[in-house]
Image 1 (cartoon, one colour):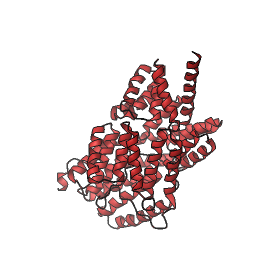
Image 2 (cartoon, rainbow, N blue to C red):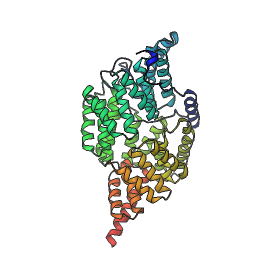
Image 3 (cartoon, helix red, strand yellow):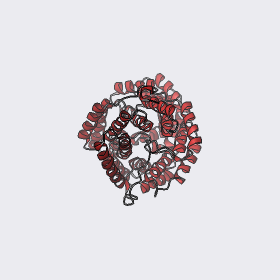
Image 4 (cartoon, rainbow, N blue to C red):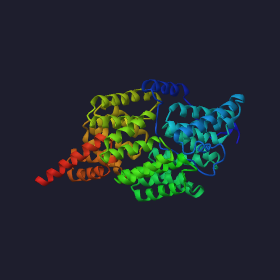
Length: 467
């Protein structure tokens, strides 16, 4: 295929807006900016230069946590950057540089790293338009930046052009899932299971099984991922799969098992922020608030993502530190203001924060409704339902909540929202059952909402006894 016979015009990057937004948030919060997309781990058998190749850290970096991995990545970035500077037409160097920046972004959460990955992929494609690995890279970065439609178009076109790009097939499945097209995601993952039976494929299948209300199948698949991913060989992969295991246990209310999984994740990769945050929620549910606060302080220092900052504010509020809570909530609002330049990366987190805390409800509802128009997954309907509930529009909230429950996804936060809405809608028995499910998995709820759910359930039980 020649450059003039590309299947479609590929999407270009938006470097100025992204770079400006990144710089602004760094200045506002004193930390690198963050986003925490669901990772898309590497697939085996993908040709050299494709998106998700894991950098093998030098022996000195193994066991030294995120700092060691970042040092190894920075060393390689310097080498490949010098190579590209010496020969700007070197599409291999540009592609490799993009891969390294993407891997760095997945550790740091810094939008600057994602933007550099996107620009490098553009550079590689410009240098050689049929370098399909660079198109795969670009699809992956677009996915990470929550441009799911762009990622899907890029990934499908790439896989149609070069069926050896299995990572493109994976991104197509991931983007379909985020857009609410479970059938397309299932088809992509089934093909991956035939072509590349491996931990990254099983991890994706586990996420789909969880959404479809089969946490037992999800658990088996993630345990299989962990068994096939030694931390000594792939610390970042082992950390992610242990974290995914912890999330499944946390949603099911198995706090001890969740704690062990998060600790395993941190053993694999010291300082891994998702595991720090998960463990903090478990510690709060276990009544160990000072430890929960310490863990979330460490997590937000590394990656001040809105939901983590909000959870830390909740813990401060519950501990009686009103000034500390207000400072965290103000930071969430500031992140939200600056995030508008990036086009919806944090929208769901900000919608739920607004509804949880009764802030900026008109804006939150508009964002939630825009999200449903773009993405038809259960979490879009859940965010819409909760925003409608906070705005007092109960009939509409009930309709959206039923859509969020439609797949049978066993997520305590969905159950909590739907339960509170059902109670307000006069469906007491249904609401109580949903709240009981939510409270059983309270470690998966934001701290203040976990308290409110438990209090509301206790009040319902007390009322039932007195009748």
